[in-house]
Structure formats: C-alpha cells, structure tokens
Length: 112
Image (cartoon, rainbow, N blue to C red):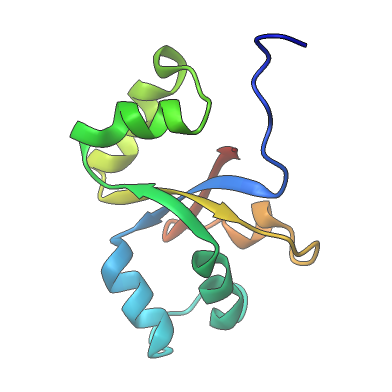
C-alpha cells in the first residue's frame, strides 16, 4: 500500500554499552555474557549502521524508518548513558535475540 513503511526482515535495533571497549573485550574473551562471545561477534558483524552521538540521532532514526517523535527521547537516554545504538542483522532462531540481548551490556531495543 502506498505510504506504508517496509519492515526490514531479520534486522533489529540493539544498544551496546561502551561499544569499542565491549567489542575488544569480546574478541579477547574477557567479558562474561549469557551466551558464547562468538554469537555476539557474529551479531555485531551484521552491523548496517550505528549512532553514538546526539547530533546524528535524528538521521539514524529516519534512516531506519522510525518516527522521530516516538523514538528520539528514549534513544537520547541510551546514548547519554554511554550506549551505541545500531541496526544489525540476526538470522539465527536459537538463541532468540531478546534472550541474547537481555543484559546491561547488550540491549534489544526494537525491530528495524
């Protein structure tokens, strides 16, 4: 239908606390997460776009077909809290993404 936004299949918005340090810790196997670090590295390998500053947040929200009014305030809070918000692809069924991203280090935000 005309004007409908297309939902991206198998794409999700997640937030990662202190992205660079977390990624480095995952690669060096220094961080404890509920599942194997290889699963998280694969998830972050499907990165399409990311934002870690308030200046680019509106562009990121629009690029991911979201309403700025609806998402701006809560996503500003994540960025202010030290998170990087990213659009990733996740094709696996097990473990489910909501269980994979259920810690303070990696959070599930919404479907892309």
